Image 1 (tube, one colour):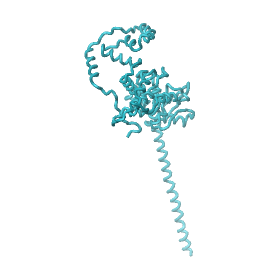
Image 2 (cartoon, one colour):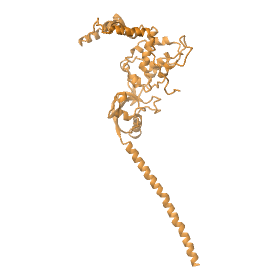
Image 3 (cartoon, rainbow, N blue to C red):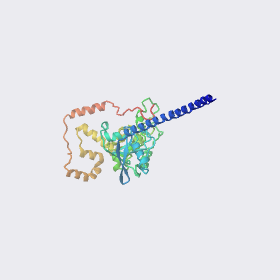
Image 4 (tube, one colour):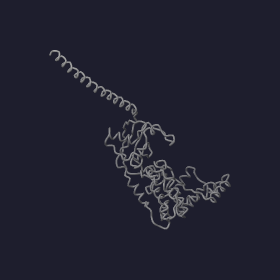
Amino acid sequence: MAEEKKTTTAKKAVPKKTAAKKTTAKKAPAKKVAAKTTETKTVKKKAAAKTVTFRVKRGERWQEYDVAYDASTTVLSGLEQIKGDQDGSLTFRRSCRASICGSCGMKINDRSRLACKTKIKDMIEGMDHRNYQGRDVISIAPQGNQPVIKDLVVDITQLFNKVEAEEPYIKEGPERVEAKDKTAYEQVNAVSNCIMCGLCYSDCTELEVNDNFHGPAALAKAFRFVADPREGQKTDRLKKLSEKGGIWDCVRCGMCVDACPKGVAPMEAIGKLRHRAIEAGITNNRGAKHAIVFKDDIRNGGLLNEPMMLIKTTGLFGAIEQIPNALHLAKKGKVPSFFPEKIEGLDEVKRMFKVLEETELDVETKVLDEGPGAG
């Protein structure tokens, strides 16, 4: 009996030792996973260890924040980092994060850009292909030429009112083209990619001094309908666009082309509208007259006759209004001659004009649809 009891005790002792081993074995992997997780977090922190200063305009003052970034961090991500971790009162617009909605337009290092498309790395290191020199501090301000509501948020009512004034819809009329080929909409494609972000409006130098100017976004939208073969009142549109505040008020600074994130090139659209207006015989305005006189002076003499160009463009009374400006120029020694000298090689210039007049050139730029809805 004693031997049987000993055997039973020995059998019961074995499971206890085995159970203890199993418990220990289960806990060991958990410690290893925890160690790996900690190691991964450390690596991530090292990768995003760089910081940059955001200098944000908030009303009348500038406020600075330190933002962590890596090679892929955008300015929008930096702003969200500030709002989430440092200052919840910072106000800005954003939505899609994919350069489609246009909500996050703002001035970044003095130029209007989409925050979601602008990488912090590029603002610091610079972009040679855009002739942009990098900076150590990133300045962020609300868009220009529009009233500021709060921080980086502006009132976009003015912009949309000007677009709406262009009557952005197809009108019935006699100029509608019924027979259309596959190239009929090539002129419409590029300007149709506008996302109404307002960046071109923000950087427009003419709008800084002329509130009546339609603005690049509105004029690009106007071209979209003038160029549409289904539009029935093209000439009527061109007449309205040739009035004061329209296509001839553009100073062709090129800022809108540089600002546009979608390649709409509003200045190019304005140039096409000018060409079409002159072709339609809409020349009874200072802008068209100036362009025609400019061309004739170069063709006939190779140089501009500036005093006569002023008289031919504005009329005698218009020229008299410019006497104060003329006197100011005279004080600075800038007095253009009424009889400019003819340049050398004038015969070659005239031959060039003759070739251009005899050869039908297609001045319209054909752009295939590569926008969000392409294909």
